[in-house]
Length: 166
Image (cartoon, rainbow, N blue to C red; front, side, top):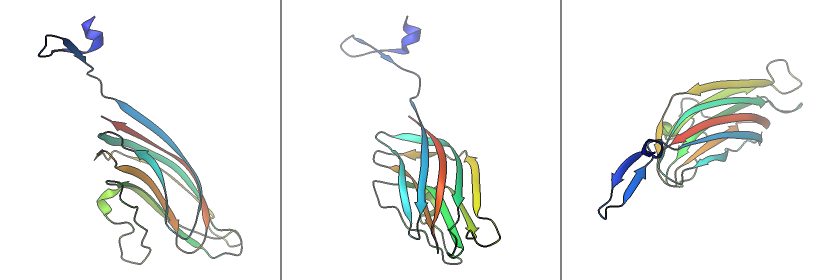
């Protein structure tokens, strides 16, 4: 009977407490279906209500370029950690700069340039991947999907999966 309950611990008052040996695992499959604007936007994927380790991040995302008549566009996305409910930073599209700072809070990212519907060239781009990166989260830390475009609007659709274990 005790093996199914976990490890036995005797308390000071002679009561017995059974401690579960298994770690809690919180699995998320977050859907993103958003218009990409020329400003940096974000969606909260995970709020840490208790300390945990985020791991096993996988993504499958498609970005659609601007409509006909608009300029070609540079699109960027990132999966980032924001600590202690701090604000999400904006993308920096300037040449030779950090796209997102602080860089150590970026878990995954992607960039592409897409043509508008009237021009030859790619009008959609698909990102698929995974990372073995693990980061410890404290209470009130958040995992966010950050996205934006430099010069024209577009659309992003896809899913991001993550695991948070205690």
